[in-house]
Image (cartoon, rainbow, N blue to C red; front, side):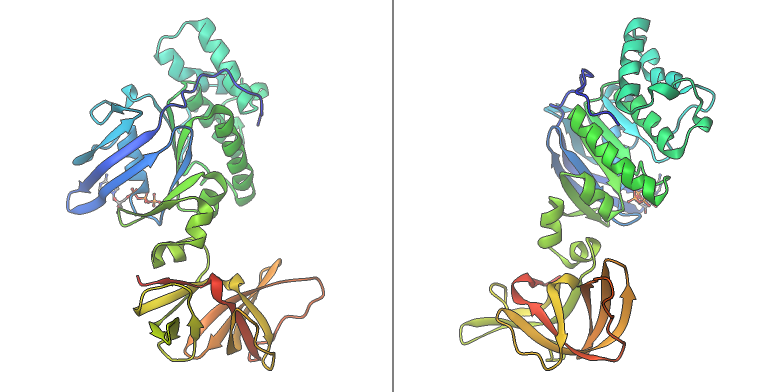
Length: 367
Ligand code: ATP
């Protein structure tokens, strides 16, 4: 897609504020008091498992669903009671919803024609939008003559051409194959940067959210679990749901105690004892990632700042860039990633080994 600076006047002053959004479908309580503030020009993702309410929340912002309580604001304007077409928002649907009998150009022009814009202005805007998504050469084709990625670009062009204050994207990449998804998410991000348009992106794909977004709201069961940058969510999850949803993680249950003014964690089976620099005493879990451990021979010397655990390789997955081992330590299975180099042998199942767990990578999460 093109990197040129655009004169499409997308208004970046459109921050979005959600206040106390509450919605039920009959007896199903889908959104439970959602408060969120999305900054002007931000690329913001709603991330969560299927059925957590992401699409419903997006549809509330778009005006296709009405919440029983709460307000939606764009900038300072409360738009809660406006119909969708008066909200100044552009939405790209999972299905693209292109008109099959119209050419690419007609599809993109449609929204402007509906607004009865002068033909000259329509042509200028459509040309610009098609150029931005690199579809100028295919303007006379129909959607059925385009690849999935090209159809996706038409859907985007058709939305940005109306110069919305906010761009709403509902799983826009989910119909594409894995390789195209990776390419399109990059293009999407570049286009968003070029336009500086506030963008809300719904996805259940953690990698997609991480690679595109400035910030992410993780949702579960109609409740916002945490809002932060991708790296902060990964490094400092506020609960076990977020820790597990963002990447592979080890969770060991036990108790946090203080002895001789030193805080430490002891697993329920007493086999894993880890010093903690901060934490709260009581029943709790520790959480750490597979890359926070190193595998060494069983007889290896202790290492400063690391907890030595003795275990047995229980399972091995060769992923390519890394090998993921499942190691049995006491009653628990610990996942460990080892970077793979060409020609290096993998450890066999049943082998006794030592693990060095980096103490400063361990966090405590009680729920
Ligand atoms: P997915 O990733 O599968 O699209 P989601 O997080 O976007 O999931 P929603 O589509 O927002 O989830 O749905 C949230 C819940 O609301 C689900 O339990 C769903 O079955 C229910 N739901 C959605 N729309 C309606 C409706 N019109 N009537 C009744 N229930 C609905």
